[in-house]
Amino acid sequence: MFAALAADRVATMALLLVVGLAIIGVVVAVLARTVLVKVVAAVALFALAAAVWIQRAALDDCVQQIEVTATGTSGAPPCEFLGLKVDVKAP
View 1 (cartoon, rainbow, N blue to C red):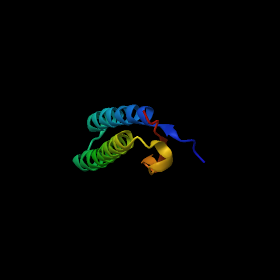
View 2: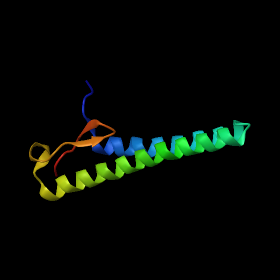
View 3: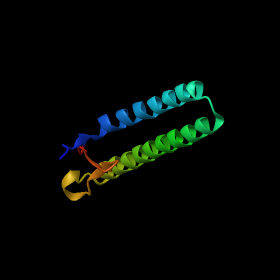
View 4: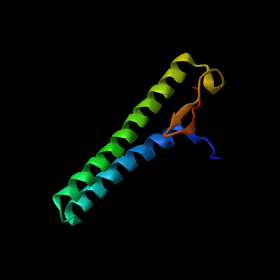
């Protein structure tokens, strides 16, 4: 279905996604008229940003584990980010 992505590109995309969610949060806070809409939008965007950040940390841990064992991707379980397989090149 999807081709595997490189770990370094996924980490960069995750950071950009967190920054983008923060910008969207600011725009929603400025444009939303009621407090309830602002609170719901802030909670939803914070949850999305937290999920992306946690997945990024898990990806970093997986990459470090593969680098420490130096077995490459064949002997180690594949790394994933939000359910997508990520290619990790062994040193």
